[in-house]
Length: 532
Image 1: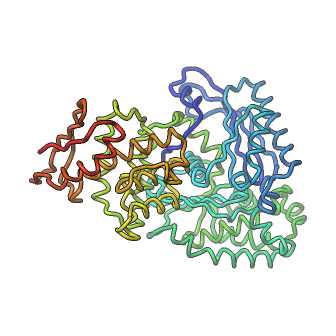
Image 2 (image 1 turned 135 degrees about the vertical axis):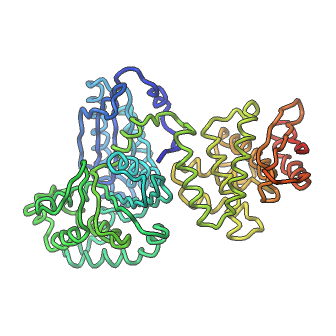
Image 3 (image 1 turned 90 degrees about the vertical axis):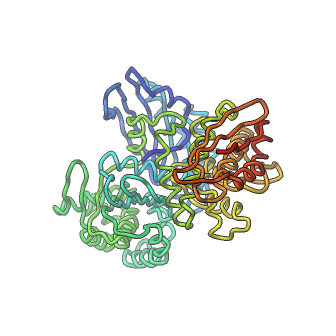
């Protein structure tokens, strides 16, 4: 399970490091802020944790109710970051990475918080998407649980959202984020919060209303393992352990779904104060544990499993594993392409894409990209965006063949592709939009909304995608590969036919000439398809 997310430039400097490095990591959740200092040494497979703390700063409490983080909470956040930075400085920490999730995604004044934290501590907060949050959680899980065989369902119930991942043989094929976080649900049903049984009934009714939407994300086939992460499931496992109802193996707890159901029923009968007194729960856990438990329980029932694996990991462990595995650059095709392409193929099958044509176009686009680097000057990140667009450029035909490039654009930008940031996904959507018909134009709002650098990426990759699509004009895989020769005014394409194929490539030559106009416009050289 790899990634394609853009990371700070300093990450690149850690690759191939030869000396000990200390790093600071911050997970800014809706219910608490978790901070950690780790030490990474050459040859060490597991980082050493030098300091770890959890601060019960509830960003979601006010955001989910009023849409903003109030000034007192902002001051608490700024103070927490200032103190963390001071501790990092004393420990000799050179680099700090801070990520924020659901509450900050929803906060209207998040830029104010980011600016104040940066000014006070010099730490830049990165607000990550639900898809990236899910990815990091999945990466953390893989540090404890082997997901390489069968189908795995990964669920994390945070304060503001629930992240659901479907993993097949180690590859994420679907990632979804739902606004079902424990703190969010607690506030939504606050009128019944003092009545445990009434609250449970409201929660269950709400979950039933979403059941069909959630079931559709699981796809066809059985779930071989159900893995739950988050502070609330850890606390539920602790409660069950006191009853002897937990089996532990290699750092991972195994909880029976029936035992979880029974524990939730017991908690529903207790008041907030009684949960602290009788169950020993902390104040910021005693209220959210029940709604979280009900979500874990219902998703387990929907998945048809009888047990839950609790590896006791979260986003910070995902970040740590990312460091150890060496995923430290802004982008590396070898590191990231599998996850992106797996997600794109899953999306393609969802919309009944023509898989053979999509794969043929991707292969040809890669060849054109690799052999014209002196023209486009793009990096490996751009190559994977081209891969994704090649696989998905025609999915709009599921809506209507006429204007399908526009439908493809809409479907891609409205979905979530694991391994891509929102900005990268928009580029892929625009590449699909421009694989035919009108060329990229500042008159098009979505294209005009990009930064100049990203507009150049779209123009260059769209030009390459059009040529690759033209080379499979018959949708029959006639052209197996192509060798390019860049000349002064032309780029010659010498085709190699697939085994058993005989063709003069009349349709392909005409298509390259027509669709190659953008290539000529962008690179100043006309593509010309030679005879086989």
